[in-house]
Length: 124
Image 1 (cartoon, helix red, strand yellow):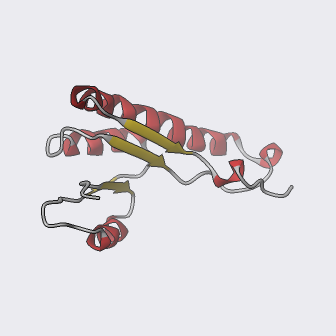
Image 2 (image 1 turned 180 degrees about the vertical axis):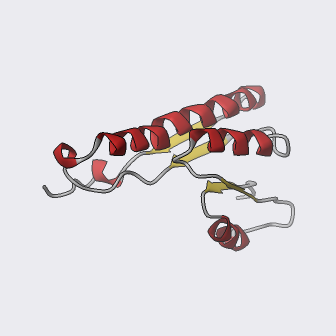
Image 3 (image 1 turned 180 degrees about the horizontal axis):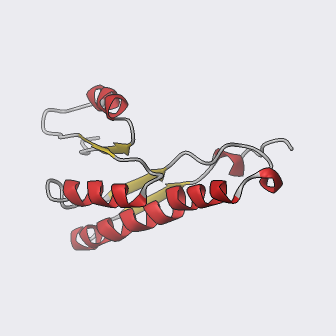
């Protein structure tokens, strides 16, 4: 529908493959940012660098993979911390960096996709 798209994930090769498949009406420009979402500082740095090229976004879709499936009572504390960083910390710092541009544009949407298990539970 004419949007410029920025993809953000940890595998640059896969990002570039997806970017090449995105529709382009000739005036669109698509980007790929590479960072590991288990490293919030890396995510923040990569986004800050990208914002020097593309300073404004109107739509943010956070869709980070969740922790390994399984019962919460057998998960390690490290698993919860990793999920916390991937979902909450990264989503928060990305939103912080983009909301100002959304306000300036007078338009903005943030969509957070946290887990498919919210819709379909994993058996115990």
